[in-house]
Image 1 (cartoon, one colour):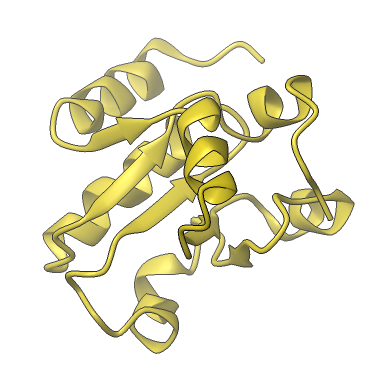
Image 2 (cartoon, one colour):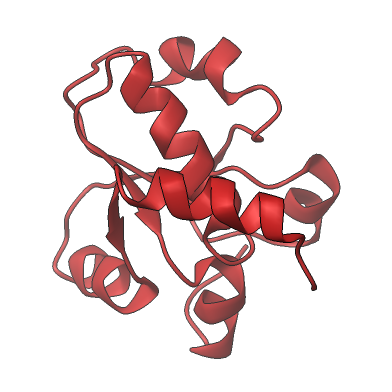
Length: 121
């Protein structure tokens, strides 16, 4: 997908402030038995087509409104993903502004997760 330069500038600005991980690291941690809170920030129609096994859904359009109901502990690690890592970075930046201290955006997102053949629902 081709993104506008203004959007890419916005994403790059957010990425300077947020922690990032990748699918390989998330899968390694899951395989090691860590109980991770993984949040899918994609649109409803993307979520319905498939998701990372065990993820919860808080789309980018509603995550700020609903996150406290799903993740009330603002110090608990939250791993966000989207299609490729742009929307999740923007969401992570906003959650940090809301006081969440351990938010991580998964660079590569759903596309990379699927390419690697990792578990999906």
